[in-house]
Image 1 (tube, rainbow, N blue to C red):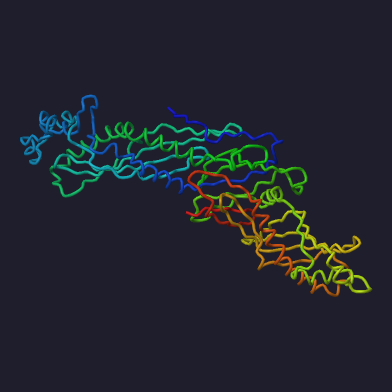
Image 2 (cartoon, rainbow, N blue to C red; image 1 turned 135 degrees about the vertical axis):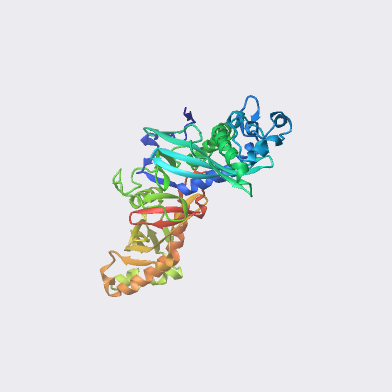
Length: 490
């Protein structure tokens, strides 16, 4: 019988009016990390501690234990003080047959002295079914005669059920699979004393342990696994949703892959008309790159999707620069009317009335070249002169892209020391001074524009999803041919 738990991933998509729904991105949690989380949780809550000091029972109603079945144990003594019937030990040691051994095998004295684990292993059976195996190491004592190490497995199934954009998680029945009992004798023991009883003890354990583990270990293990899945798979939307201006994440499907749990996530941004460059509503799916070795999880963006998001978050702001700013002196000199037109040179007084502005109406764009990411920003520099005259230069700035994630936000920054400026249209009279113009513009943009622009980009970073047990604050950006992978290391 299947135990059905509350829906973990069940958000429907909002109406289109609430914002721009982007093509899906992906959240992956490695199978190894999930396995570690389950193991740590079970160890923290000591799920096997409930069976320590418990007799292995064959007849639970009467409280009988295994030693009552053994011919060399006095039944009356085992009920009271678990003593031995020494009259039968000699027969056992002499090799005589013991026809009543199996009939007398009822229970008492075989006690679980200690328990280790469980060790957890995961097996992906299909994209919707995960098998969780708990390897339990039990240390049993049979009076003063025998000490045993017994290994027994417990299995639980996790099934994902998908209906449209709604995913539910069902935990299948917790059970002990047949034939998974392993037994080892600890210490030095006379083989004549233990061979036949050991064979029968193994039979009793094979019958009794499944009942004991299912009764005492399965309930807490199932509850803890359910809680862990809720915490791990449920995305808390950042920030707290209060209106259509918020960035929102919606999990649409979840599936098990060989190396990870894969969640497709719909991102909705408050992107109005005209805020983004025209792009296809649905990008053609491409094979996902493998998880980075040594990573516990990642958030995966197709490059076009990230640029789409970037264009929605981008806020253009005109930058005004004082014409007497020393960093702008060379550009003002080159662009001033006295340099561009024949005639008297502009006076200092006329320059004082000029205005220099930097315009970047279009958003930056990230490009991938192998394992290198660059970012470009187009813009123009305009010098407003007296009598409503003006001159302008179009340019494109390219630098190495620097990604960081702090305070649950993904930030993009330009790196000034790698900046390269390409000139666009500019006044024809400056053709002979192109190199001087490029050098002056490059130095000016590095000193005056990029610090301001980077601050603007930091102020419009992408909020990241909050997933319990995962933190993007130490994440780094890995690159593939088509994807940006925000990777959380182990």
